Amino acid sequence: MGFSEGNCVMSSALSTVTHIKRQQMSNSSSITEFLLLPFTGTQQLLLLHFCLSLTIYLAVLLGNSLIITTIAWHHQLHTPMYSCLLKLTLLDLGIISTTVPKSMASAFWGTRDISYAGCAAQVFFVLFLIDTEYILLTIMAYDRYVAICRPLHYGTLLGSRACAHMAAAAWACGFLYALLHTANTFSLPLCQGNAVHQFFCEIPQILTLSCSTAYLREVWLIVVSVCLFIGCFVFIVLSYVQIFRAVLRMPSQQVCHKAFATCLPHLAVLSLILSTGIVVYLKPPSMSFPSSNLVVSVLYSVVPPALNPLIYSLRNHELKAALSKLLTGCFHKQ
Image (cartoon, rainbow, N blue to C red):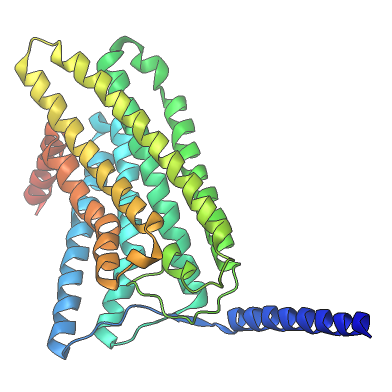
């Protein structure tokens, strides 16, 4: 009798677990859209948000488009460094175009919904573009190291074929990284609703909607990714240490100033992307607040694309001269 009762209890427990799993999968599969962070306030505040976002977006489009046109038009800028800068500018345009237009539309129409496929697409493209940009910034640090510390080997180490291979590797790594994270994240059962406390879809916010322990495999994947990113950052810092040591040995103060003016903004952008990314992806859920999440996400998804044209154009005399020639030629034609 006791044995049969034990079987009944075990069967009941198994059926309960099965029912819970089916309910979780049903909840996950029933989600057809997500709700982004709502824009609260009066109609005037929503309009102000829309106008501010539109101004920033148009400024980024104009600045990055000018850099792309200048590098493509000026044949003297067809070098590995400016080739990386051209790709970096395209990535910046992609990053801000993935997040800001949807935010502007939500503020203008007073809506907050985004489709399931649209949310997955946002996660994929943000990861793909930011990861590829980070790898390109690493390649640019290596380019500066070879140009300053090993100038006689520059043509050998950074020839056209080598640059093409490195660029292809950057795009491929970014694509695989984004595909792996996106597929893993959206395969998790979601049983905590569909409200994303952010102005665009990002992995940490999706994980808060997943079931109790189902998100742990994605967390470990994020930890490994952050370790790889830190490894790239250490490589970049060591490269710049060698660059600064070589520059400080140069007798010309003008050369030293030019090298520092080029390298320090590069390091600043890298530090901003890495630090904000670590905060977003490794911050404990207990320390997660909508306002802080919003500020940090703006810092890594909007600020770098807005600042990169200023950092890499105003600090670069060759690019400024080429841009001046381009604008002068356009005005003369008119």
